[in-house]
Length: 101
Image (cartoon, rainbow, N blue to C red; front, top):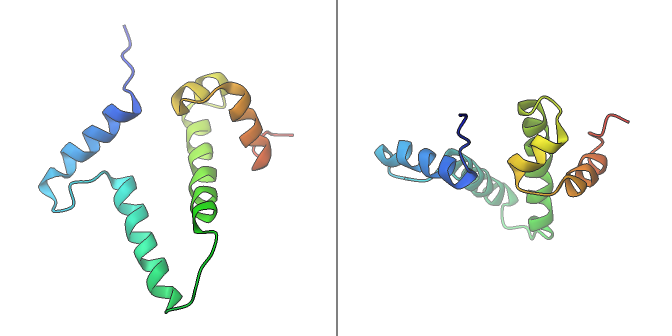
């Protein structure tokens, strides 16, 4: 019988692997944190707006692309992996032009 790891289990695994590091956070979180720190430094004192929406858009597209590749284009499986319903996945794929239409 094939066992499936949940997202939280995978993140815990990543954290366990990183326990040898001072950060003790998963690689995705560390990457996002480091990228945001770089972004704020590059602002050089200038104001920014809409950061939440910007970050979500920057993360969501590669997330969808990677999951769709991982699932071989199977939207039902991809929706399960993402923990969203298939209708929501289809809407997001269309939003980013990944629907193959």
